[in-house]
Image (spheres, rainbow, N blue to C red):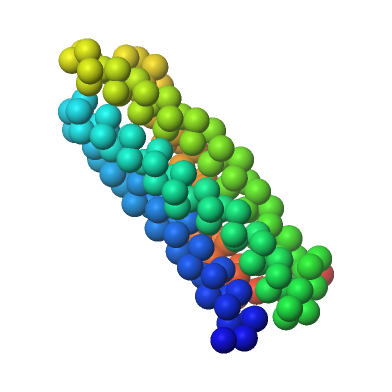
Length: 158
């Protein structure tokens, strides 16, 4: 396997992990949250935090490294508008993701306390989840836009 193919496969696999893990954990986190079942919420939140650590974080690191190496290998202009737009969206997504990681960790912690004490979830948990939900949408849509930019490589402006 040549260098280009290896890098492209790694780039695609890491983007798949990034997108798939994000979508999957968001699905389970949100729909479990809506059940109101504290034990289920605590479990889903704990596993979401773990999945972000095991899958999302490495993919977040691999994406720009393989992307940069591919751009150099293919002699793409690193200053092209589509690539700058994709980079800006990736940074924006990261700026949404970082607080989401903290919010998930706090939500998991609060849900675990409520589970152990057999009590209701505190209001802070619901506040964290509202912010988590609000940050998830722009990040999700940005990743979709990045995928489109990577595939189409459009001439955005001159």
